[in-house]
Length: 112
Image 1 (cartoon, rainbow, N blue to C red):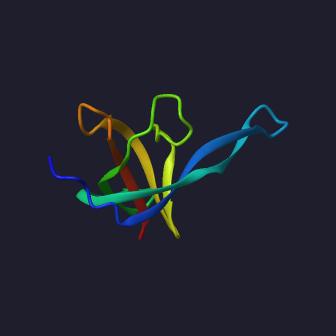
Image 2 (image 1 turned 60 degrees about the horizontal axis):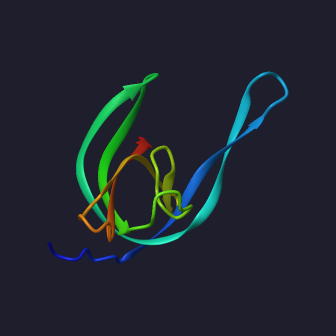
């Protein structure tokens, strides 16, 4: 298996929920760290949400492996940030048997 070309610097973020005092919560994002990644587009689609066209592209994002329980190991529902772009992580799998690299399957949604 060929080693990935980790040429994009992405910020890993996790959701933080805070009580809003009315029985609900507000959500913000906490920075966990920066990872170098190989980012590849997989597929895309467009749909309409409340009359607004929304484009969604799926990505395969490969990063260096991290042990289970590490704050630097990406997990579903976290996200990667690249400037103004946001990639929501849907699933994470080890890319190789030794766990040297992780493959993150992520989506980017953009309202047109």
